[in-house]
Length: 160
Image (cartoon, rainbow, N blue to C red):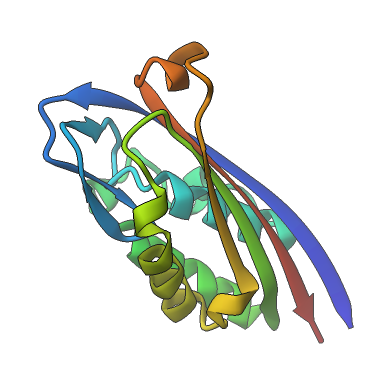
């Protein structure tokens, strides 16, 4: 049996005049929006990088480049599903996933159960094997000023 661990990270700036942001496929009402080539889903992007990294693959930008128009404004759940196909082809499955979202606002906790449900369906693992935590940056830096949101993900894979 092969056991692999991978760490992922992503950050996206925010701009005013938004109606919502998307995190783990959940639309969260907010007066700002992500500045991104895709939908800017920081958590899914971190998860994708954690899975790819665990398998020794190149990062999300190598698999889904931001200079390719077919990924413009794409739903990051689609990118996650493609990553799961790569993982399945390499005969890996997820044992568990641990994530942290760092945002001063909006409040993330009310949406965590829906995020876990979305990720469970996309990754084909039990919600019990997914942890999502929300933290603030204590008003420090670009996160603390509400200029960006970041996420970390660590995944444990097992394979044949």
